[in-house]
Image (tube, rainbow, N blue to C red; front, side, top):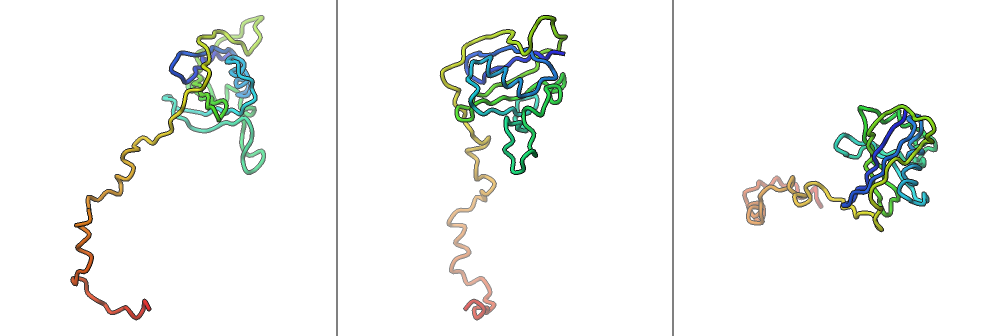
Length: 179
């Protein structure tokens, strides 16, 4: 079977490519198809990220094993497309060049029979031009303005006066233990 993907650049302008690729091909093959479809030189590091239906990033699938124990971390070449993408799980995020952070939303749009005479992977459709620079990403917490709210107790300096210089505390006479 052939997987047909729409690969959308996360940018203000509509820039996307439609790619057809065999379901048995690997994520590394899809990475190469995306690099070629968007005209990158392929010299930068990239990763795929699994995600949920609303594009919330989950697990990283890198190009290279960068784990502490060699061979322990699975890479793009270890996953066939049909291992992680299907009609139930159609979305994955692709990031190319971690300095510029070119980010793409990759969605499985169709699963069809292979066409005779077509060489896969194949660029089916191209819309829009890649901007000169990747869109700047802002990494912010959801409740940035409410950062210390869990520690807020509505006490101020006047409230703390009740503890200073007050003779209401009983003296247990343990001063000799502190010398």
